[in-house]
Length: 169
Image 1 (cartoon, rainbow, N blue to C red):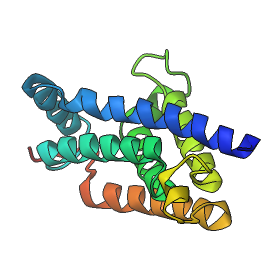
Image 2: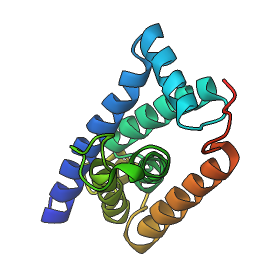
Image 3: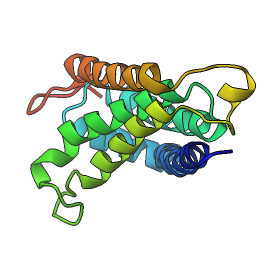
């Protein structure tokens, strides 16, 4: 195992566990699900209950895939997309620093950058991708993560975000 394999493993584990727990927190109880849906509605997301479920399951699924090292660039794209959406709809108005009122966008940006880096690294030797013979890193992995992540976020925002408007529950 070389240093890139170790870097991929450490970044996948840290990002995967972090984003899994982030999603699980949204889905941990009926109260958390209602709270997440209410918050999504308040920030302009249409169909807030569906959005809350989609966000939770996307984050949990991406986390599991990253920890396992399976379809790493696609899982990284899911993290990138959710972080771009979070920055646009919830954090950009508060400035960069997370400790600003309303919580700035630095945390989401760091997760997004790590996700892109992981998409380029791929799963490495300690991954299901490697065990299954899936060579899905490097330039193609990086491009997949970037294009699917930014494209997914853009489509999601176009379909679901209505700033200042009435968001249907």
